[in-house]
Length: 363
Image 1 (cartoon, rainbow, N blue to C red):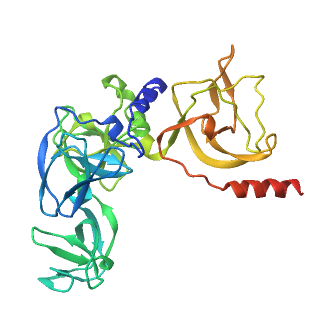
Image 2 (cartoon, rainbow, N blue to C red):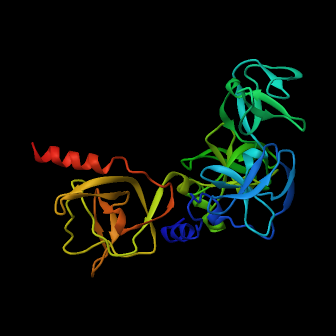
Image 3 (cartoon, rainbow, N blue to C red):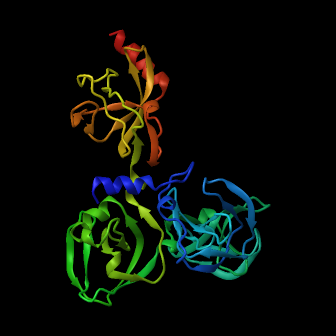
């Protein structure tokens, strides 16, 4: 996708207060299907701004949801079929996959065993929601159902997968398909029609654009499926999925973007302002990539300020010139706006920048 298309895609993100890795570009569509889902864990609904609502749902009750999950802060959610736009965590419905670390009993309560025998070490199980604390202090994850079944939280490992993000795809393109590496290189040609693959991620963004560059005429924002357990991908247009997966945006999950809402000066790492014969980075609608937020001591102002480090080197400028090359450039955080992607945290403190400046002055 060219720069203008990428800017347009980023401008569509509208969620407030949370990282919009999917919702901003995936509003509920009239063509989406509503399905009935069973909750396996007590749940609350969330607003688009990420706030908990007063809407509470009991375990084993049913909710009507849109069958197309979305990603918020790298976690899958379902839209609820309500007049107000509300979301519920997919982990409370579909669960997550974990490995059992020790042979474990299944419990019906905090102390009474369910009589189902042992769950063997190494087995993969599905747990639902966060762990629960019983009156006797024991912490357990809910498993199974529809009756209440639990396993000790200490006996299972971290999350290794999500049923929400796994499905089977079948190659439907008459001429077959191709398997791609994330670099864009084809790894295997002529995958026959009707071939089937397990996939565990649906993605758009820069890698998908690289992979599908040769097919750009088929439309912007290509989407690719990852073959489970590999770094190999299939173009979504070549396959049909058994169920819908949430769409990850690679760019928004891995990078941060700012906007120049005014003409902006550029600084060096030592806090001195760059001299471009009076030219500045010009106010612009595009979203520009940054990769660091930090405090830098500014000698001319005798104080430290918060700066973003620019990933790019050449930017449109004021005056009758095309671009300026800023090299390893920084811009004041208060002179720009954070607009999308991963929200950065300062890598140092104001006090650390001041101390570093004092130490340099005393040498």
